[in-house]
Length: 307
Image (cartoon, rainbow, N blue to C red; front, side):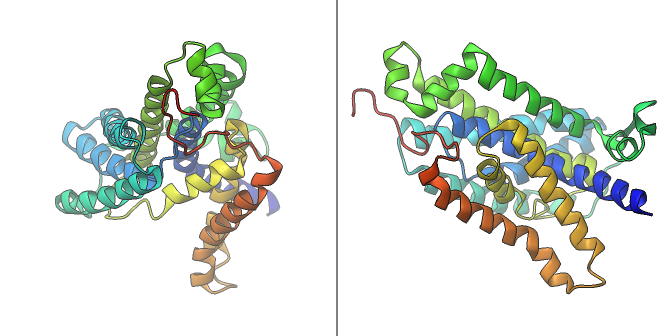
């Protein structure tokens, strides 16, 4: 009985955490370069719509995922142009991107509303590993390939950030862009690339929802996941491996909210993941004085020669 309950929680928690982890990893890289993008929700919903539309038209869900990555990248580059090149308020630019993404997806997605996807991404069963007691049935049975790609991406990003020259360059741009510039690093290029990567990951996260998790299109189907991804970045202290644990925590909690709705008011249970999101954001803000890991130049536009 206990094992069955745990396997169910592990399986559903991991399935729900995949889009949160994908989006959080992308935003983590962008913020490591010093760029805050509050448009994660907008990029995710645009990725969900474009991924579904392309997968539906082509019959190939992987083409949908790639299209979603491309749309997310374009949206992120628009944010980068305003916040990096024009040095506009990065918070306003990100919020505008979210509002535009939600509105545009609602308008363009009307012909697809309620239509199931004929060829979603298949679920995988990994022989041998799926038979491991307690862990195997939840992690290696009936999961989607994008979950494993998200977990692999977290480990690769950790290695990149802390074990490679490129990772040091990225972190130095987020910590002290003037010093990085003095050493010959193109600060603007690094920030553009990091922001574009964040957009691509957010687009893939959205596509996961519409071509894998529940293969269909529904207006507003991201349901605030982009904001949770932003909270995960803070809660994980800008560390990719901690982001894995944080994403699973949110995913498992969201699943348990449905399991316990017979014992507690369902309205309260449905809003608890978002209450925890606000709590973690507040704790992250209060913890700035003890250095939780936020890049020193986070959210500050860089102007060459300006002190």
